[in-house]
Image (tube, rainbow, N blue to C red):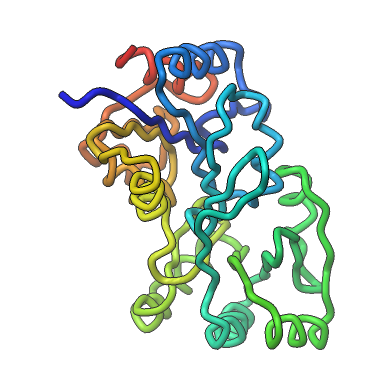
Amino acid sequence: MDKLKLIALDIDGTLLNNEREVSQENREAIRRAEKKGIYVILATGRMYRSAKVFENLFTTNMPLIAYNGGLIKEFNDGKVLYQNDMPRDMVKPMRDLINKHGLATNFYIDDNLYGDEKNEYIHGYAEYIGVPYKKLKDEEILRYLEKTNIMKMVAFGDEEKLDYFLNMEKKALEDRIHLVKSLPFMLEIANKGVNKGIALANLGKILDIKPSEMMAIGDNMNDEEMLDYVGKPFVMENSNPLLMKKNYLKTRNNNQGGVAYAISQFL
């Protein structure tokens, strides 16, 4: 078995408990891994600015995978190692489709969060991840879409509407757009080829680390490609049932130090 050199951690539902806190048990496990020379990184769907608040967990200045793999950026100096924006010509058609299905939209531009004027989900979402936001009128949104690079979009709505959207639209879009539900009410929309697995592959090339030397821990469908890529994939006990059915290693839930327990299996 290859020596473990890197551990990639999802944040929500994995590293954080239900109180949105990192337990002392998980903090100590991260430190133990780092003392053994293992890189520990975050791989999240969150914005960079939202995930950066967790940098005090780490003693090494490792890069952060944000936006589900659309951005790899250094913690310490903000240097961008990799970025993959949505195709500009696909952003307006995507918004039109989202509106057609009666869903709300978030936009991520230059690490800032924007939403439709009538977006009723954005306040709770922004509060949860700890970032400010701005709602835009339709004419303002169109100006942004025509002139600005969009890192990611998110469609919000009830689970039935999102599933219907995927059933109706995914096949026609999948050659250029990556769609994945990270929560029952939340559909992540990014460029084709943007996922945590590809991001880890890119980071592995930079650090000269093979997939067999990596561990990943996650809980939802936006973690699937990352879990498939690494040699030591762990799913949380509180994971999406679809992930639980796959042949991954299992750990405890996010309220019982599942991250620490998984790390302890290889230290």
